[in-house]
Amino acid sequence: GGIITQTPKFLIGQEGQKLTLKCQQNFNHDTMYWYRQDSGKGLRLIYYSITENDLQKGDLSEGYDASREKKSSFSLTVTSAQKNEMAVFLCASSISGDQDTQYFGPGTRLLVL
Amino acid sequence: QQKVQQSPESLTVSEGAMASLNCTFSDRSSDNFRWYRQHSGKGLEVLVSIFSDGEKEEGSFTAHLNRASLHVFLHIREPQPSDSALYLCAVRDTNAYKVIFGKGTHLHVLP
Image 1 (tube, rainbow over the protein chains, first blue to last red):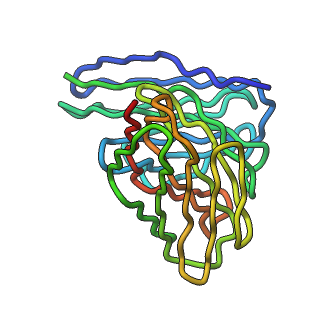
Image 2 (image 1 turned 180 degrees about the vertical axis):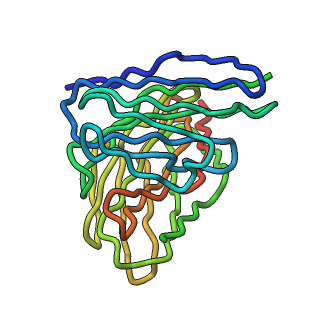
Image 3 (image 1 turned 30 degrees about the vertical axis):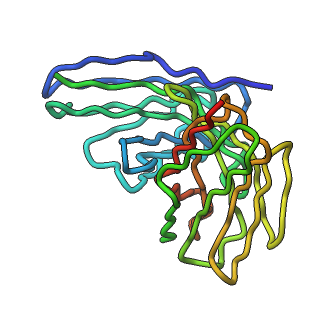
């Protein structure tokens, strides 16, 4: 088995601040994903990465940057936090992209004051 | 792009009574469907994957796929209070790397 670790668990930021979320997986999976989960809206894909140094935009990429520094890690940056923003950011990984189950981390909970 | 809807938004059942959750999708060309569960404050846990019409059982969870009617159901046999959670339907999009999630059904199991 493996595990996905997300840091930090909770993130409180200020309006306009640049905030970075980190994700590590030890499954040795090729593909990694970042999703945003808002109450009542389900999960929306922000970025995904098929392999190290690859980046693909999802449906919600505006306002975010991502970086796949190595196979095991995938980071997400909120380029300018929006006031009163509150959401959960979930990282996932899969062996490859096609057909395979995505395994999820516990999430980072963001609150912008 | 696939559109995925789940019903009901919230479901309350008594411990031991069968719980049935519904998921509808818009494009029957997909052959990759999963049900996930999310306990409050936690990540998603995969329950059952199904890739062809019919049923697939994993423990107390049974998925039933009917692509002709654009439905995939999840049946939970003898649910316990610990099964109270948000249940999410996930459908693979025509872009193989993208998965479209429904908004979820909140299941409450009363002791």
